[in-house]
Image (cartoon, rainbow, N blue to C red; front, side, top):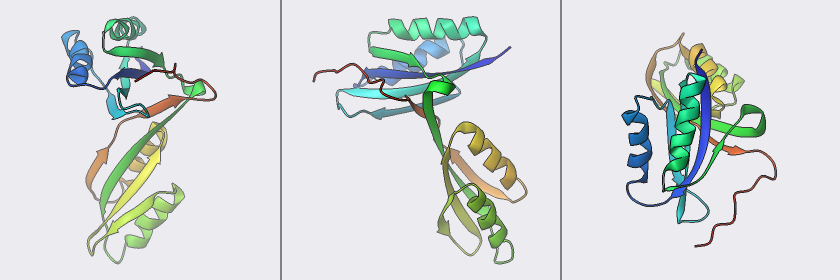
Length: 168
């Protein structure tokens, strides 16, 4: 049975860290389902959100191996009930004057934003959890999806759980 694991890694913000993290996955034959990286409130550190799926034993090994990397300052598994995760999708949908209102109606149901309109298409922006994004894409399959791009998952633990204070 394949499980899904979302990991939040606090890493040193320096060249080569992304390569070392992704290299760990490829050397062991594991796939990364989603990967997002960005600098944190402290410019010395970046936050990586990594999503992987596999057998529970393989996911446990991934966690342990990532925790051993020198560049990884902190690692947490983001459990669905105790974290907030979001993804962004941009979708260009073919839309003529005759069917544009239908596309806009579907976007409205999901509280998506129309961010570009041309005579032959619209670009829709939606932010939400992975299930919401997937449901939205599924509803748009009745239209012609011209292009689609997803950011991958970003997440943080809920509540008062803060990262340890890290000095510059």
